[in-house]
Image (cartoon, rainbow, N blue to C red; front, side, top):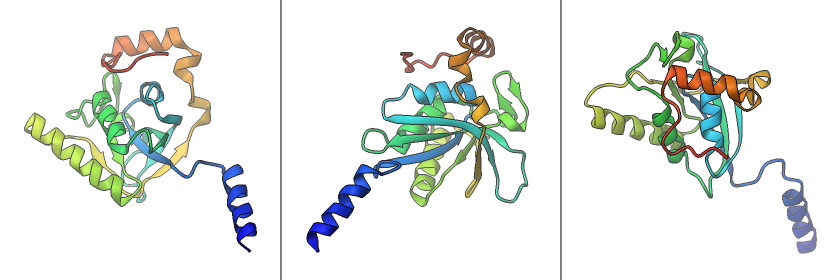
Length: 179
């Protein structure tokens, strides 16, 4: 019986769709292409999906967002939050940089209690550093809808993305190293 159990575990590990240590986070940083490029540059990130996040009750407009798949042995959710706060202007709840409207407003979308506690702590840190409330929204239990047609836009159009990002401001991030 022990031999069968070890064979089963071996097969699970051999054919695992996703590593057992993988995790994901959904973040609405205002601009999916800028967020995609910034999070892809982080060591430990395996994939970044672009898409839209919607609140469960439909009370607000959907937001441009990314779902970041990462190896939690090499990178933590707190590290992703650090990059998030570099990407966004916490004072601007009506969009980010030259992208205006609620669809571009930043939001934290924790997917678990653990992520919720870390997101609250990061928001409290932002408040302490700036001495005022942030306009970043918190959406528990939001729904992420992938937009595969929008993925890799920045890498497929580097010249256009470069002009757009520099014209809008907030780019490049100081710690982002481009491969």
